[in-house]
Image (tube, rainbow, N blue to C red):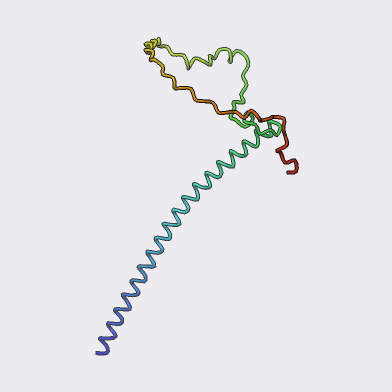
Length: 141
């Protein structure tokens, strides 16, 4: 009788140990999956940050080349290759834009009667406004 009870307790303990081992294995697998996803995400973030840093360095270089002026023209992408001589003259920059096919003109659109909207009434301007009157300005702040 006592030995049967001991056997039941041992079997129950073995089942609990197995369940705990299974849970631990499942948690380890989930941890590894989360770590792999995190690693992939962080790799993408690092690549994006590197591209951003590279872009900012390029803009800084262009600004220094422009004498410290961060204007739109200085920071815009530009082709810095200058060509001179017969090679430049032989190339036709508009060749790609031209088509070898003849273009047929579009038929003219019938003129629709234009119905212009009624003109809006203008705002009433204040006649008493004096442009040179600075009495309403606070000169202290």
